[in-house]
Length: 130
Image (tube, rainbow, N blue to C red; front, side, top):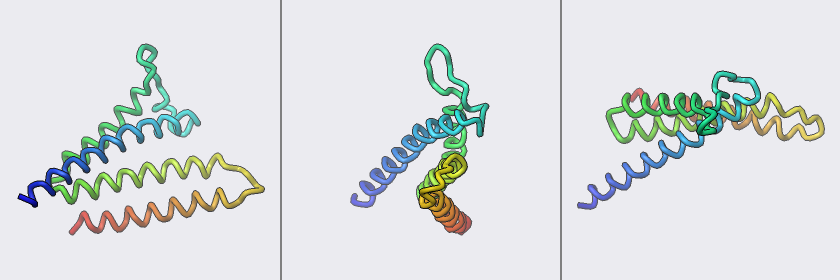
């Protein structure tokens, strides 16, 4: 009975992570696209005022994560890897546009975040291959 409750809690947690990352990643992709890094994703629907292509892109990636995994553990790892990929994209854009010469700490903070996220992706990928 306890293992069934833990499984339900784990499924709800994974679903929440995927939904939250889908919502935030589509908005993050839209924000990056406004800086002309990915101009295709900056399209906003005139009627709904939403970044349709960013939402579709993030949904497709989330769908691939969900459909390509056969276990809860792998789905959790894949959703975390997806969050790290979005973190790399956002920190890469922040590094590119942060030209504050007086506060060099900001630029190095972005580089450290990119390196740590890349390491996490590497270790997570190893876990997926097991």
